[in-house]
Image (cartoon, rainbow, N blue to C red; front, side, top):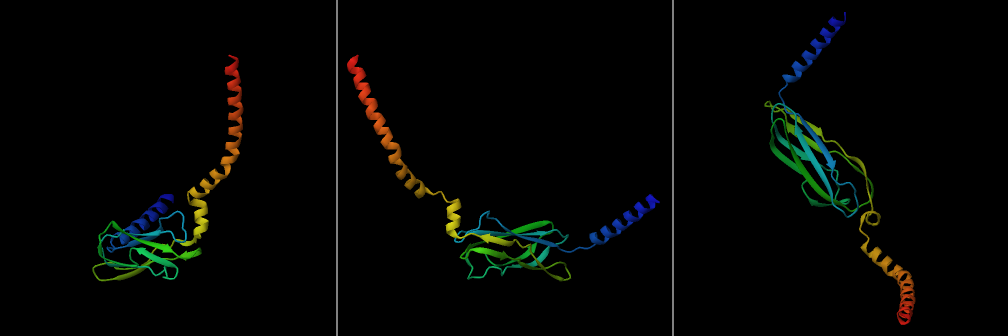
Amino acid sequence: MASSKNLFYGLCLFIVFSVVAGDERARLLVSKAILNEQLAQGKDMTFLYTLHNIGDVAATSVELSDASFPAEHFDHVSGRYYVRWDRIPAQSNVTHAVVLRPVIHGVYNISYARISYIADSEGTKVESYSSAPGYSVISSYPEYARKHESHVFDWLIFSVMIAPSIAIPFFVWYQSHSKYENLKLKKA
């Protein structure tokens, strides 16, 4: 009984893989990722779009568009929101990067990008979406600076303020040490 059940499952798997293997068309997997670990107002944010063609044929007329960055929330630094590739070969990938500078702070929903491409020789147009990073916290610049900047000016002020409490006891010790050293030399 168990061997006939295994034979049935094996036959089902064979049929499924046969159907999938006969499907010669492009299949794009698209990811959208934030490359920065810390997001802050006024600091550059880099988004990387990666398109993987896992299909058996080339994807043609591939278009990527992203409308999730309104101009009132982000300054555009480099890269394009709309990109077109004539062809992405089978079993290969392409990447595209966009650099933005947020002018806002707080929680922001970074949504998906839209993808469209022709998947096969018959001209079947496929529309899809990338992964979406989701909600991200964009820190205000003063908060970011307080946590991540080098604070050179703060350390300079601290050094100037702490100098008297170190220098005065040193000079008192040095004077008494010199006085006793001079007495010791006179006695000798």
